[in-house]
Amino acid sequence: MSNVQRPEPKILASEDASPVRADVGHWTLDFGHLEPSSDEFAVLTSFERLVFRWVRRMNEGLWKRFWTWCQKVFGAGWIHLSTYNLMRVYGLENIEAASRDRPILLVANHRSFFDMYVVSTTLFRHTAWRKQLFFPVRGRFFYDSVLGLFVNLVMGWWSMYPPFFASGENPILEKRAFDKFSFRLLTELCRNGPGNVIGFHPEGTRNKGPDPYSYLPAQPGIGKIIKDASPQVIPVFVAGLGNDLPKQVLGNWRGGEKIRIHFGPQLDLSDYLTKPDRARTYIEISKFVMSKIAELGVEDRRLQNQN
Image (cartoon, rainbow, N blue to C red; front, side, top):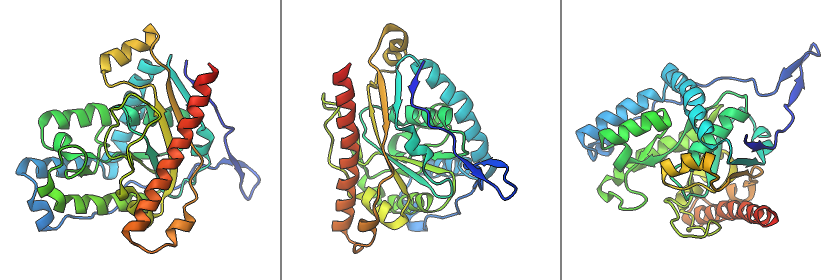
């Protein structure tokens, strides 16, 4: 079974001295109705516009609540069955210590297609507070093909949202206008919404090098999101995952590499948030965030060397 450091559940005393769980709070189903301008929407194809409208609807209101339940029961269920012999989780108390009243931004290194799937499974299986997950993705696969739409459903339960087209490998630069809207939407998700958990890879794309403790430069976009939205930021280091799904699943019973997830303490970004709103500040924040992910990598290497 998975090896998880379990923190003690937090209890608060109510006025009548009856214990109540600290993680019970408001359940936010809607995060606003930001709309792209006609110019921003015009750069998408008719199919991309249709898919975006559909996925946005699935991430609002009761639909979001329903798909979150599916994600918790079915999505996290099959991922657990495929990884339970390999999974090792550290620092879960850092997630539990975060406030339930503000969004949480998880910033993680990126080496596998499945990084955020195992992270989300860990959250659903080992934390009891109500949450709704969002994972910004490349629009050019998940939003411009029937296959991408299907993968978003069966793998992410529509949580691969919002889409970005002019980022990562082979960006579609003519669609930068729509990405400006997606950036505003992502910022709003990080600013408002108790229970919002946003998974983000500061490197922008997968690091395909052989060394799990090497990292690509952090993109300044994560710095601007943090500067504009001021969410709770928790670094995450993930190692041990591959990109071959059948091999990864079979490794659970054939003795594959251990999957390690490290959650770090919430980052203190107060000094950066008081700096001028300019590109240099965004870069400084991005580098700081990436350095904290790397520190978790150092701890992982130390634990690996002990085994």
